[in-house]
Amino acid sequence: MNSPTYLDHAATTPLDPEVRAAVLPWLGELFGNPSSAHGHGRRARAAVDEARDRVAVAAGCASREVILTSGGTEADNLALRGVLERWGPERGRHLVVSAIEHEAVLATARGLAEAGRAALTVVDCDHQGRIDPAAVAGAVRPDTVLVSVMLANNEVGTVQDVAAIAAAVRARNPRSLVHADAVQALGRLPLGLDALGMDLLSLSAHKAYGPQGVGALVARHGVFPAAQITGGGQERERRSGTENVAGIVGFGAAAELAERRREADARELSQLAGWLTDLLTESIDGLDATGDPKDRLPGLCSFVVTGCRSELLLAVLDELGVSASAGSACSSGAPVPSHVLAAMGFGELAGSALRLSLGRSTTRALLEAAAERVRIAVARVRGG
Ligand code: PLP
Image 1 (cartoon, protein in one colour):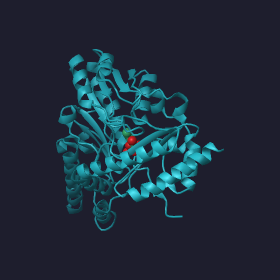
Image 2 (cartoon, rainbow, N blue to C red; image 1 turned 45 degrees about the vertical axis):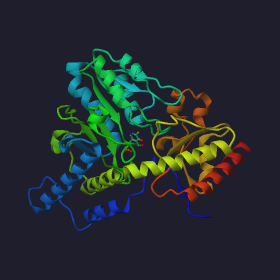
Image 3 (cartoon, rainbow, N blue to C red; image 1 turned 60 degrees about the vertical axis):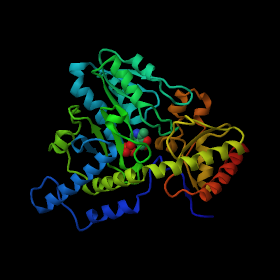
Image 4 (spheres, helix red, strand yellow; image 1 turned 90 degrees about the horizontal axis):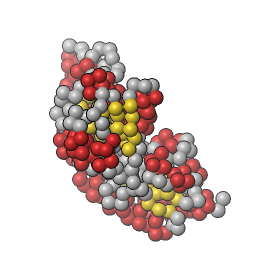
C-alpha cells in the first residue's frame, strides 16, 4: 500500500520546510534567555521581537497587542479568564459564548459558571452551524463582560460573520468586549482586529504549518486581560514564563508564510475541497455534507455518514491508509458524539461525523485515491 494520506490538517499541520529552517538554529547553536541583558539574551530578544512583528502583520494588529502563549487553548483561557478577572468587577460577570465553540472556550466558560465566578449564556446555531448576530445581541445584558464566538469552526468549517456579531453586540452594550477564536483561520481567512471588529483574537501556530505548543492572544491596546500565569512579568506582565524562543521563531515564520500564501492556498484548497465534497456526496448514499456550503473554511470537508459510527469508520480508514478525524482532535481519540453536530440538530448522527481536512501538499490524485478508500470503508462498516 502507498504511504498513508494525511487528511487531518485541521487537527495539526506538518511543519513547513521554511519554518523548520528558521527554527533549527534555535534548537542548536543559537540560544539565550530573552530577559538576559547580555549578547545571548539580546539576540534571543531580537528573535522573539521579530517573530512577534510577523504574527502582528498576519493578525492585523500592532506588535504590542500580541501576547505569546503556549497555543490556542491558553489563548482562549487567557481571553475568558483574563477579561473576567480584569473587567468583571467593573462591567459585570456575564459571559456569552456560542454552542459550537471549541472546548477551550466552552469548557472554560462552563467551568467558570459552575464555580460561581461567571454567569453564562450559550447561544445556539442553525442547522449549518451559523450563529445569528441578532441572537447573540439578544443574549447580551448590561453586565455582559465578554462575548466569544469563533471565526471558523474546526469540526464543520462554518465561518461566522464575526464583524456583524461584534457590531450587534456593541449596539446593545458598548462596554462588552468581543473575542473570536481564530485558531483555524490563520493562513486560510483574512484576519485583522479592526476588520473583524474584535477586541481579542486567539491564534495557534500548529494549525498553520508552525510548531505545536505556541500561539497568541491578540488583545486590543487597553484591553489588558489579567495574567493567568504569573511570575517574572514577561509579555508586558500579561503572561509570565521564559519565552519558548524556538517555538516563537517558528510561529513567526509560519505567520509570515501564512500571510504570503493565504490567498493562493485558500483558492486552491476551496477548489479541491468542493470537488472532493461533490465526489463523495454523489457517490456514497447517506453521506451528507455538514456546515455552511458557502461560508466555510478553505480545505475543510465535513460529513455525516448514516449507518457508520465515527470511531469504526476512522479505524477502517486508518487501516486503509487514510488519516482522518471525526471533528475535534479529542473526539477522534475518544468516541464522544460531536457537541457541534448536536447543537446543529443532527441528533443520533452526531456520532457519525467524518472530517477530511486538506493542506498544502494535498493533490487531486491523492484525493481520488482517498475517496475510493472512503467508499470501501463506508461499505465495510455498514456491512458489519
Ligand atoms: N480552538 C480551535 C478552534 C481549535 O481548532 C483548536 C485546536 O484544536 C484550539 C482552539 C486549541 O489550540 P491548541 O491546540 O493550540 O491548544
